[in-house]
Image (tube, rainbow, N blue to C red):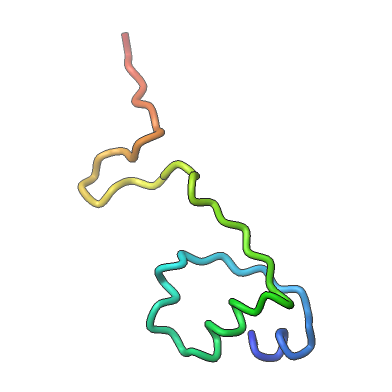
Length: 67
């Protein structure tokens, strides 16, 4: 699907953890890094909103106190 959209120059929105691209098929990664057709929007400074693996809340979330 990605190859078809790339060859047809169709707009495609892809979200990814950049680290998750390591070890992927080089043909896919090369298409995602094509500066002619790809605009990357980096969100390096976004705060983590998911729960950490330890079960604690991630930084940026506030615990609600009952008084």
